[in-house]
Length: 395
Image (tube, rainbow, N blue to C red; front, side, top):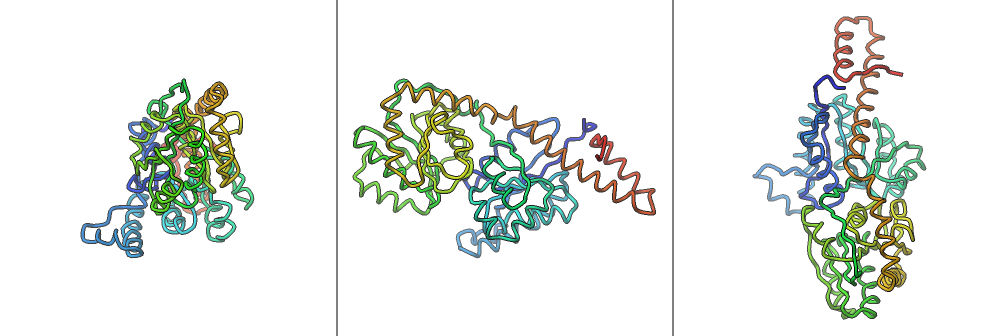
């Protein structure tokens, strides 16, 4: 299809030095593309390690941002110049201005087709507040998001987007039947305000009143950890473990060791953690934040509660414990729901997306060059590009 040359894709995203959803999904994508016959993909980190003499700045607020940008921008120019397609992961607000936006602008300045892979549940507010974001997002070659929630959010502002699901490795997250279903709860959300882990802790207080030996494992870290620990003490809770931040290679062990997954965000998109719980065989109880209902239908794949409603969340958990047969029906449906998120399904969608923007770019070049008076070298260049990527028609 490509005449023997692999399509070169620069993936602009956080490295695993920042443990979060973007970094995890970028890492999974790059691992999946490794040794692929059609795609040569590599990471262009938005958080590059600065030169040794400047690494002291990593511990100094504001200065580390300046040093990061001074390291990041030249890296973008070098790495995007050798790419055929630029694949940019994106969050919102200040993060959008500092990381995705420079990649989008430099990619376009270098004449590279750009795919924006926007992933933030804060999109409705971000787009309503930022004219810069609305204008620049609308100008990329293609917007791809992981949920219908974000398609709808973009559509509100007249921006087209299509869906490609997050990736779940079913070899790593192995299904296990929970018989009997034990009162062992796990959460894998970081301790940031938007994830409202305090609500999880309050719900657990209600659960432990009924099941005194119930356990809660909190996997993650963040600025709110001191106050969350204080809340555990205030509520006189037992069997609460703060496991800290763990690497993506370790996270599957926490799903395997527990029986119920709980998360209580106020803002979210389509969290990979929910899909991982589905794959691992844990029933999921969550707030109905953002795009969560797009992947979890209440009463079919798991149970949803209103935002910050710890009593409703606890009631759902107690129902699962009281009715394990019902819990098992949710587990089985959820496991079926995650099958389209395997690499076998997602690979072809990304490959088509990369080829579609490259084809569109080639056609634009061809049409532009056809209007010039001197067609000698231009025609040769256009033909080489078309032969390389088997472009049959510009439509």
